Length: 295
Image (cartoon, rainbow, N blue to C red; front, side):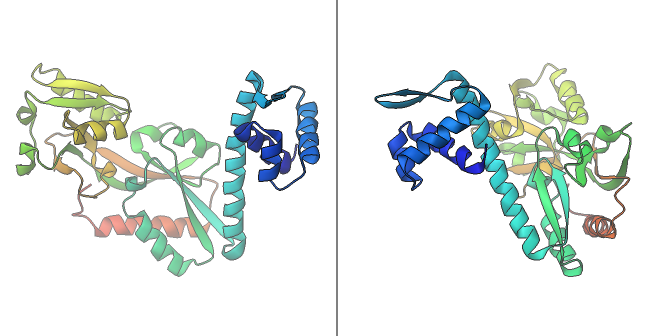
């Protein structure tokens, strides 16, 4: 199976017409049909059912084409990254994080790093889930994580970055926006969005508030859904400060509690590249210099 056959298969799945698919790819229909037949013979099952009206995907074909489409997209990205890399860079450092705002100073760190290491590329990798597993498979050089997640993981070095606190997120028109600090009693009678993969410290606060019996709650599957519900006026939520994108869409108000999050960067103990140490140093200094920045 080659890339041309993959493209032919994806195009036929889109058009379900041999003639139209061949025209779209600027090849003759006999050549196109032959390549599809060769592909089916190689993999050992029919992808398409032929008829006088055109083509239809077989049940196996539906699954196979979905896989091919994902694979083709990944291949496209790999080629693009390779082109970028070969054109300018001699090395790359990949950093895995769940959302862009988790490391607020990342863009500035990349800018400063480029001034001292112009031939080393910093490549962010966004993985909302399974970031640790991916890092341990050596699919990333640096991992943003909570310190509690890194305990008893062999072969990694943990670098403290900053301490993040808990905030209440509200609509900008909410009466609570006039407060500088939110306390438990301020939420009595309100609806609190909970769940959504909350870290352990945040879950503890949520449970404590719900346990008062004076606060309603609504389960939300993820942070984006939670924010959508907050924007719709369905409730408020608590979140770590490192998720604040500082866009101004919502009001983030410090919440009065002892819980916080120790945010760290992890590297592989075997990775002794000076460029990695340099980049870590730049990030750490940015956070140290911004001691009063709300996190």
